[in-house]
Length: 103
Image (cartoon, rainbow, N blue to C red; front, side, top):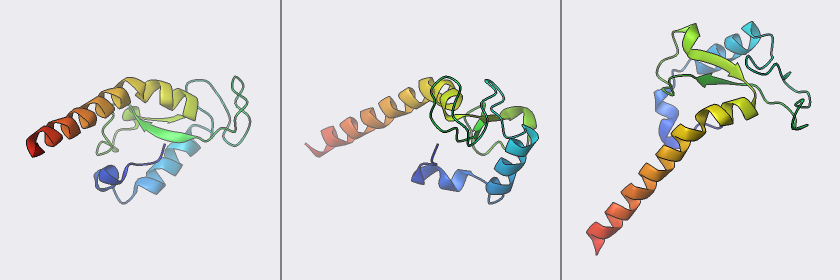
């Protein structure tokens, strides 16, 4: 998943190396479903793009291997969906509140 612009500063400068290391330790396979990076996903047939997920959803916490998982986009999206929906709702509510202040 792409890093949102407002979150870029939360990632350490070593993030590319950390991410590569976690994916390599996982054998460039999704740690949850076994899908292989660059190959068709066994269930969706889309090309697998392996990425590293923060299991606590906080990009500042990169020091603990147990907090990071190499996941295919399907597993990563499913894992992040509830938090992503809450963030979208929160940002939407902030915009509505700010619009109310302008009227």
